[in-house]
Amino acid sequence: MVHQIELVLFILGVISILAVLASRYRFPFPVLLVLAGLGIGLVPGLPHVHIDADVVFLLILPPLLYSSAVLFPWSELRSNIRSILLLAVGLVLATMTAVAYTSWLFIPGMTLAAGFVLGAIVSPPDAIAANAVLGKLSIPRRIQNVLEGESLVNDSSGLVAWQFAIAALVTGAFSFELAAAEFFVMSLGGIAIGLLAAFILRQIFRRVNEASVELTLSLMTPYIVYLLAEQCGVSGVLATVAAGIYLGHHSDEIFSSRARLDSGPVWGFVQHLLNSLVFILIGLQFPAIMKGLHPVPGIHLFLSLALVVGVVIAVRFAWIFAVSWLLKRVFIPKALQEPPIENRHLVIMSWCGMRGVVSLAAALAIPHLNVQGEPVPERNLILFLTFGVIFTTLILPSLSLPWLVRKLRAGSPAHGAESEFAARAKLMEAGLASLDSNAIKLGLEPTRPVIEALRSHYEFRLERYESQLNLPEREPVSPEALKTLILRVNDHMRKKLHTMSNRGEIEEPVRLKIRKDIDAMEQRLFNMFGG
Image (cartoon, rainbow, N blue to C red):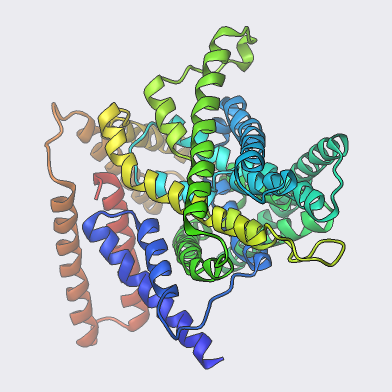
């Protein structure tokens, strides 16, 4: 037990060091984590870290899917639903079929059933990997939303297909009609359960006024929804995503402002920790996978891997370009039309097919024995090919996408500060317009000093935003220099505050409250000025 705790602490230390190195040298953090996990797994004497598939599906996957879904804009989902479904369902099934038949025809010892298992495992790009890589790129927001929407939904279609492929592998029986019917039942049922659970939780959240309780319920929500859906025999993945999108869409009305402020750092920490563990655990599995493949010649393994990776990448390119071409030439009602996507952005979308921990967990969940009690001979080969696809599709895009975006000039323009200040000014105007009427409704005299002080606060902010809009040209100041200036000024205030506390001029609760205000102001300034 002590050794396991030491290993966990060691891994957390490695994650912290790698996070600093990735930030300082602008190297993809997920790639560093996978390579570090691979290196740690090869160190002699260290205990093998085994990933239980249930731990991934029940402990890691729900909060990561939920946190991504909460932030996913409902308007973008609605306006790009056709593109998302074509990728999340159509491309998954096309990739699974292509990998299955290619593996069956060209990889020695691979049966068609095993090929379908492999195809189902490697067909869905991973939401965790996609967010980790796409978050660092300046690609157009619509393209990023389509890719994130695809990765949120396709885990469900891939896992449902995987369940039927596993049944065929261990029993030797498969019914396409039954599988298709079950697919729609599990998918629609998962969405229904997720929305129903989210609606009930929405009523609960609206009646809770304690930020700590709201945050606790928020952390419990993905597990509640996922387990409820799985107990009902439907897709827990889609239930979690549906609940997250619904609650995120209504977050302004159901969460208090304090809960929203507190949830950001907490969920940010959860995402960082689980994402980091996911990628480093992927690398840790490789040595154990290789041990089960000793009798197989290495050249055959890597030729088979190159074949599968080639099919996965080629099918994605072919599907995205073919579907885009077809949709431009097929009559679609105006209500369902979506703006066409440029070819350079289609290339970026095609290259963003990162696989991740969901694929690895699905591979690890393959039974060791079939219904006759005999070992499943293809299991170790599927594990190796899955790891290879994950490693390749994660490493190559992570390292090459920044260059590719620049080469194709596919990046999006920088966020316009003018539009942000204009929006802030409109909000201040709306707040001032409603101040007197709301004060009267509450029985407060609008001319009272405290109301006048509040009015002055809104007017001051309005004047500041309007002054930013009236500048003839925004001065080109380095964001890093501006961030350093803000830090130094606020650090000076914090030191002064600490000195006042040491002299007994203020009590400790007052110091902590003022320091929290300075910290909050610092973050607002970073957000406003791009620091």
